[in-house]
Amino acid sequence: MLVRVLKPFRDKHTKRIYGKGIVIDITKERFDEICGKLGKGFVEPFPEETSEVEAAPPKRKRPQKAGEINARQGKSILENNLG
Image (cartoon, rainbow, N blue to C red):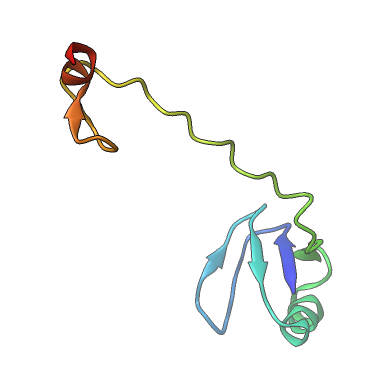
């Protein structure tokens, strides 16, 4: 299950420090253990729907400069323009 960290804490099993705001994947049993030992204010369930996660914007292609190789045709832009 995915949970969001509300307060920083160190995981006693992995020895990792989890900072506020990150989302981690743990088991339901581990979630219950964290809530039982540390209290309810440290982690909260995070919806596993992908609708909240924004997709990365598509990468823009940079314009080619004169002399660069056109990968599809194996010719430089100057050669394409000349003939």
